[in-house]
Image (tube, rainbow, N blue to C red; front, top):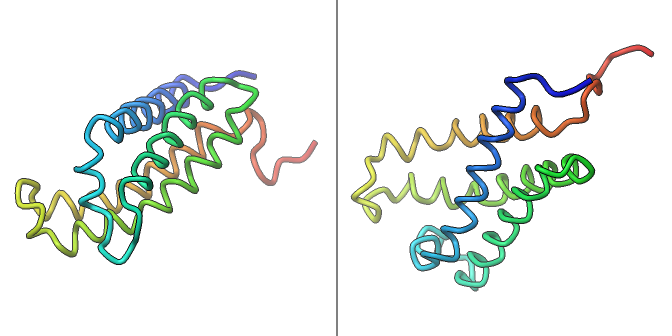
Amino acid sequence: MSKTRWQRIGLAIVFGWFFLGGIAHFAWPEIFASIIPPALPLKTPAVLITGAFELLGAIGILLPRYRRAAGIGLVVLAICVTPANVYMWWHAEHFAPIPSWLLLLRLPLQVLLIACIIWTTQPVGSRRGRSS
């Protein structure tokens, strides 16, 4: 069995999100460092490390052999960066060019992104509750 058309579209979206995001971490590290909550140390290394993991995850989901592991890694990464998204929303005044409603919208979109990662990277035919 192969992935459905919608799953392939979802996989392409996840790939694009993390591949472009990973590149952006290296192109504009100071922007990403600015959204890390002040209490967290080593902002620039954190940005570069998360950027590298985004790129590895994006490439990994394209390789069927590594897709599931890469998907799990991307879910963990998405959860780990959620505090930065919450920080941006709570301190929207520091990010004036971005409307606060858009920063708030990012939070449920993060949940949808995680759901999409899980849905598109699970092995085909591995639905829970299926009997053999």
